Image 1 (tube, rainbow, N blue to C red):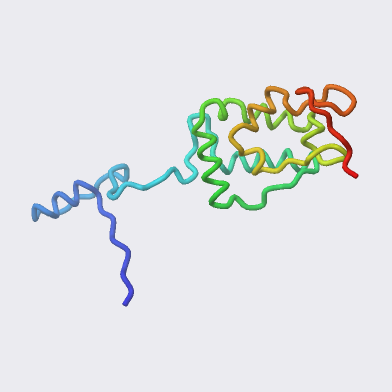
Image 2: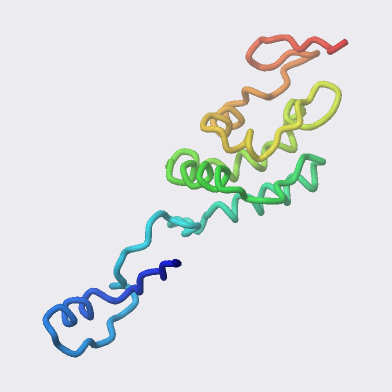
Length: 151
């Protein structure tokens, strides 16, 4: 036996139906039940998880980094959480623009080659903007840690 999905009706129509009156159509903003989650709704700045993925892929294609082909459910949830954070939302574009000028984040001899999952971590944007991955000199990061070659 299969169950059919419940039909959604507007709140005024539901009230009229319960009173035994003829139902009138209601504007879609009063739909019942209310939708859950944000499901890729843009923020006040127009950012949404798909915009983050698209911007990442444009930058990654130019730098030789891994592109994000799919926006999986965990990635989408993480991106939505990051976009809900005002400091992350204010700085993610600047951090994305700084990655091509940061050798430690690019694939290469001493670079790690970051990906979208790394970028969506809670502290990555702040770390990039603070210069944690910037080079200071011969093999040393700005924080003073020395990078040794892998043998």
